[in-house]
Amino acid sequence: MYSKKVLNHFQKPKHSGKLKDANAVGEEGNMKCGDVMHFFIKIKNNKIINARFQTYGCISAIASSDIICDMIKGKDIEYALALTPKKVLEEMGEVPPLKFHCAVMGLNALKNAIKNYKVKGKIKKNKGDKMKEKQNTVKKITKNTVLSDVLKIKGAEEVLQKYDFPCLGCPMMKMEMESLRIGKVCESYGVDAKKLIDDLNKLTNK
Image (tube, rainbow, N blue to C red; front, side, top):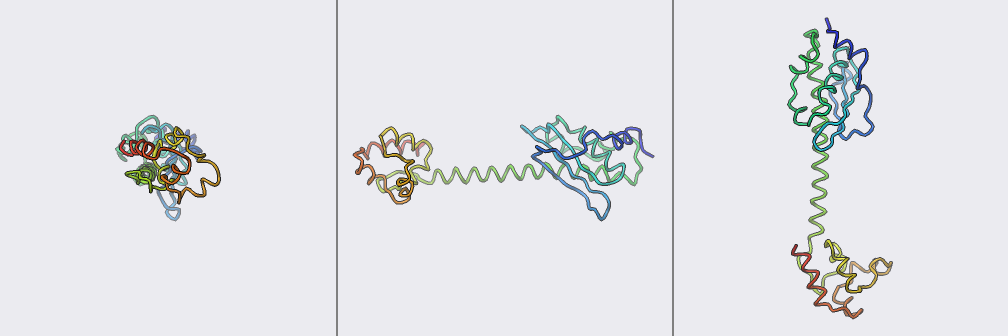
């Protein structure tokens, strides 16, 4: 026997369907077993601002998915991760004991979505760290430092422009950046190499 609340959520689910701007997606179940649940959630500043689902299964599977969406909207992800099947079943009301597992599956799908979100965040962070590391590979500028390495330093282009350095955007300069040494360029264009290099090294020490 199902509670009236479960039947309402089954017959008129509020959160059924994909969420176009979801940044976290999770799945649980197997079509061979009959129940498959997909959760789509939008997370911003550690808070779940929207949640939807696509569930293929029985009354309890669909209703529990819809109720979980109700429970997590507006909550932070720690709250969602701490949810238990018991808590979901209490929200559902009367459900046949053989269908208790639907609450477990729904939560697993939700937690898989959050897990995937966190993994994506770590990948982005690692990429950012690698880019930052790449930008800071030049520890000290000398006359023999190539121009392409100089430009990896944040703020270097602005410093070069102050010294009326040749146009860094011209095609010929772009082609030669990997081999042009800053001392040689200064010599060719009458730029005070020592003063320029001192100013550039101030950036590497920040």
